[in-house]
Image (cartoon, rainbow, N blue to C red; front, side, top):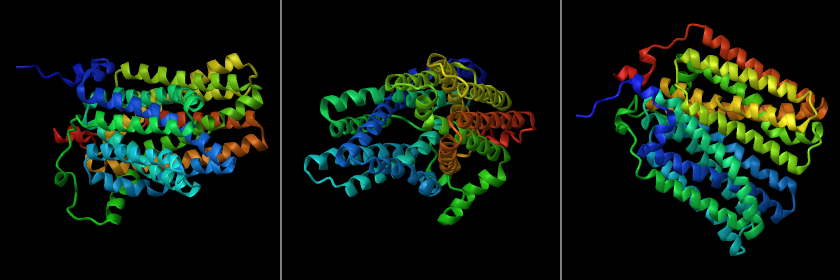
Length: 430
């Protein structure tokens, strides 16, 4: 009879061993391919719209259409996500995205692609894509054991960073060789590959009847149940959301404004800007890979680690605002990328531990909506500061926000956390 490993033995195993398991290995492989394709399409789609219209404004509408759905539909999507099989949702989303993305170059080839139809397809794709992230976050605890959640999330986060590193470069080559519209066919194919990788995966999902707290609650009631869990019933989840909101306010603004800082403070050429973007990705990939090998630890130690990492990122950003040396800026941006990349995997793991399965969709969409709104506020606010007060002042402001986030996480770790076995669904069920 095979011996059952203890939780301590599971936690002691390197996170990379998850890649050798059938379920998680397939999930990871599909996400790597899908994220590369997604990054390719972001570049190709913007280039395609600009090539089609010659208008920078009409090109930026694409970004707006990709931002609106998470803000408007996020909580509503969470309700339906909690009513459905996570595996079916993940596969369905990838198949729908395959069709929608394929339609763009297909209609273009038929001379039937108007700007209005293009915007509609982009908006529909964005709505469907809004579902995928929370569904993925809700599925990870149904594949891996609780002690491996941080490692699993770090590996999933690594796929995004790999996509950011490889996708834009491949897209550029593809645009030059085959045209932007043909690159979109490749993106559609990556979604199809992701769906095929998801099909053999087995999730430890309960029957739908067991995951609902009420047989026939109304939509409004379901929404209120999710909001009540996040904002009223579970103080730990609320504090995590506060920390995540502050983090998004600063970190997203830095990434969005990096070209402004590079050109105005460092007088960087396009080639040097490319190196700065690459250095950000290098830091993020390295940190995510390292985090996948690290033992998860308890809640308090994880929060202390997050606080220390954010403090390092704050110092790096503030220092960057005082320098005019591109070589040293590369080092500081690597440090920033690495120190901020640990945040999401750790917070996701904590949420996955604390959230019952029947609420996971609502909790993660609520977090995504809050993070998106905060990111938009940060981009707008620090963008204005960069124009009105100068990029150096804006960088210092971003650094202060990140340092404030570190202080909140540190204070959070020192207080008596309201966490017991009943808070963690897996332990409560045992």
